[in-house]
Length: 198
Image 1 (cartoon, helix red, strand yellow):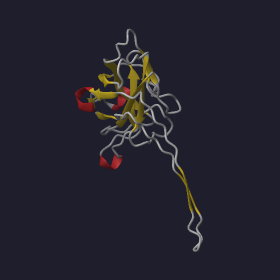
Image 2 (spheres, one colour):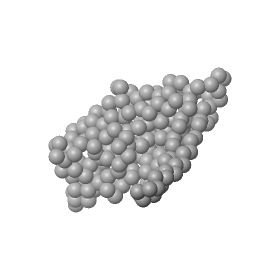
Image 3 (cartoon, one colour):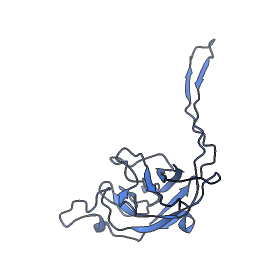
Image 4 (cartoon, one colour):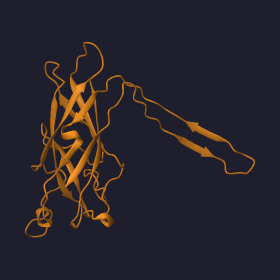
C-alpha cells in the first residue's frame, strides 16, 4: 500500500481567498458581485517529509481489519502500530525567532473524505482501477498517540518546543483503516501537510 504525503510549503505570505459570486441571470443585466478576503501570516515554516513524501504501508489481508466475530478490529482513533515516517522542519523565517510551539495540519489533497468518517484519509484509487473499497489511511502523532484529524476533519497537532529547538524531525505513523466492508485492492492517499509556529 502506498500513500503520498505532499508537503504544502507555505510561503511567508500565505493567501487564502474566499470567493462569493452572485450573478443576475437576466439578458440585459450582467452584474457580478465578488467578495475576497485574505490572511497574511509571517509564521509559516518550510518542511519536508521522509523518503521524498512516499510512505509505503505493508500489504495486509482483509481479515486484518476484523475481529473473530466480524466486528472492526480498529477504530480511526485507535493508536495501533503503523508505518513510521518523519516530517522535518527545516526553516522558519525570521531572525532570532523564539518558537514555543509548532502546529502541524494535515488535510486530504482531494478535499474529499470517505463516507462516515472525517478522521480517515480517503483512498484515491477508484475501485474501477483496482482500488480497495471502504479502506483509507489514518495518521497518528507519535508524540501524542492521537489521530492527526479531529472528528470534524480539522487538524491541529501541537508540538511544544523546549529551549527553542524547533528545527527537528517530528515522528508520525500511518496504517490502513476500514470505513465499511473491505474489498481487496490498492490504497493511495495524497495528504497536504503544513506547519505554523507560535
